[in-house]
Image 1: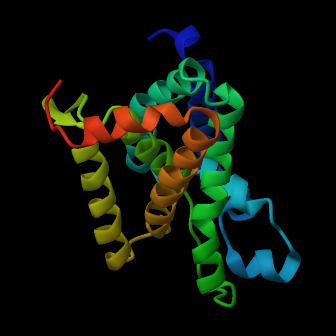
Image 2: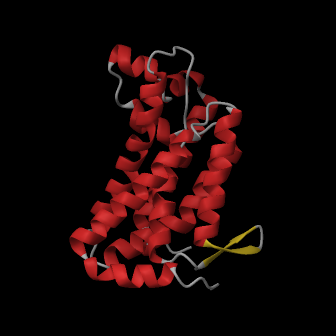
Length: 213
């Protein structure tokens, strides 16, 4: 684990872990930081769009999100720098704007629902994962010792979140995965078009030729 290879990713993981642990042990802190559309509309607590993305429902939720972010975040952090796509500034925009955009549909849908609450880094992590598949869709990741291409993991991840959203279990905002994923694809495509359009032929070539490794 080389911190210097992806410092922003490791810092964001550390913040997620620290803030989530605070939420696990402090109900008042959790209540003040969770995504609560009703409070945002009533009291203009817009900071919740950010704070709610750094807290998690439980250890499994936290580990699942950070495990995914660890693998894909390091790659995107490096690619944005190597390919002249704005480096860490663009990477932070992808992460933070992704988390906000992913929560907007839920805010619109539930802004008059006093009882609705949600939390988790779902939107930001999904944005990073789906940005990654543009660069290296068929590279593999080990999931429970099973080699799986990035693009396959990305869509399984999305399918899982849509399924869990329909079950509506707990306060995890599974809807944010869908919107975060779409944002990640669109944002990164615009970034490439603006800063390095010559990458598109290689991206299309990779997507159209499935392979493992």
